[in-house]
Image 1 (cartoon, rainbow, N blue to C red):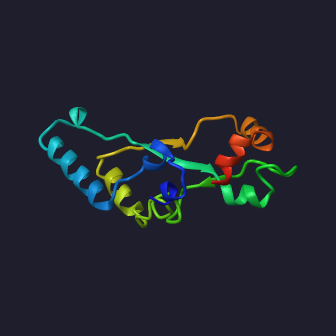
Image 2: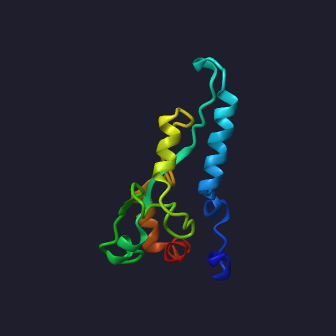
Image 3: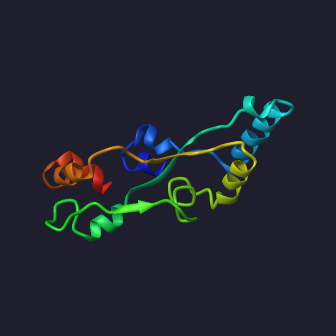
Length: 139
């Protein structure tokens, strides 16, 4: 909602992670039910894409991005409770124990990914000269 109020719709990226703790618990209950009585080699395991990092926009801005000569890519690792589920726009709190529980019960096994797959050197060079890239960085 905040991005729409500011006149920018992030599209599917802004809605890429919308599950709540209740949603995850219901998913795990469903998978447990489907797996009940099935041999281990036929049991379902959910394999979500798990985003482990992305651009650290605040740190990059502190280095002068998008147009400053010291502008450089900085990585924000989403490994703690300040990561994507606790931070805006998700604001769902720390769900690590719930996710770990699903992994330990062999209900899911995440595939670790970055938010985007792109050439960070090229992106930083575009930031320095391209008004469209600058506008999206600053939002």
